[in-house]
Image (tube, rainbow, N blue to C red; front, side, top):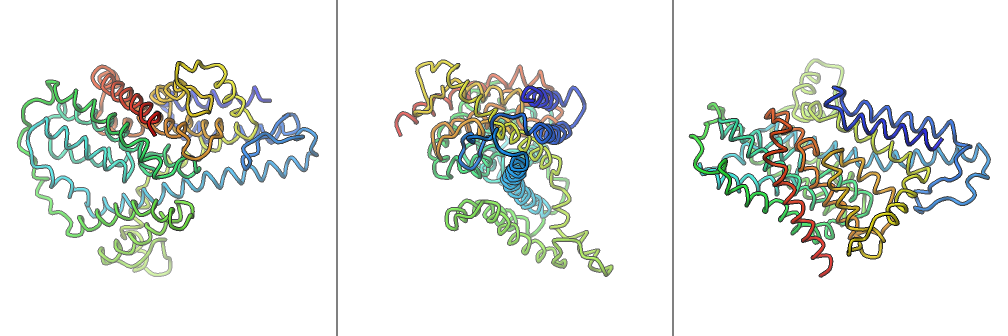
Length: 465
């Protein structure tokens, strides 16, 4: 039965990786894989020799000798445990996405455009690199990429010039997301799973992530594409900015930044703080839009229905990326099935023994730096979410062990090496119709140099701390 489970997982994983070739959204194989894997586990429950206890992070003793009803009860408890952990991540992401959409509803991100006054291509390169690096740490790398490319489209008319900036934005956004617990889905997963702390993540990864952004940007500043000046800046079509745009931008960003602080103070899961932040932002949004307070649709009167459909909160909730949420549900629960049978635990032990240490080892874990570097390269080819989800089940090191910080960095920044290797790259590819092979020729080598520079600096910093 274990072989069937591995085959189903590999086929599902392959379908996710080849979504562009198959023309099937990756959420479909992710959900199918989750359902099939847990069905196989339930049907073959009596044939499995081991069971992994997620609470103690160890294999259960005498699992095979348990009665069938006891195994069923254990299966239900395990499924509920993993669903609860997954729901924490999904609810957190829903809150963050909604706040960002509320800011966009008030055209708050246009405030950033007003800061861009220069026409020098080189200066614009550095401005957008640092904006992507900082914004992605606050509102996540995917949203930061969407916001900045949207601003680029209003500033630079020439698409051939613009796609070069888009390529650097992808690298900078992924680098910025790696050092923040709310900057990337993978770092959020590690943070919620209590593998990294906010302080530990920033301390160990701020410099490697900064180098991962600065090195490619510095090299790119000498390329012909970033020499000279851009044409006159567009006036945004004469569109009048929303008077509450700047207020909602600062309020929304402050609310998201408040979440880690709330967690440190109360020790409650991050999604609780995110819901508090969302409620505060929603109150101001409804007040500023002069509509009724209607986070959920109210039935009964024509007036209340109108307020519900046109209020900023309802509008923002209708615009969040639900397919992404469902994809995370599918992939995280699918990986949980492998973890429950102890398959990932066995794979981790095999990796520790089979991979040469190459002179460096991660703080007594027996895990080579080479393993984590391969994970970073792998995240450029396949989605980094299942890679990090698998690592959570494979390794049992304590919070803030250097292994988790290196995994956060590698998975977060390695995806920049291919345009399909990260959510930021995929969305930029769609917004600017960037060709896969153009990115491979022009940008991938810059991303690789940044990734290696950050990795080397991490290893040095780890030795010093």
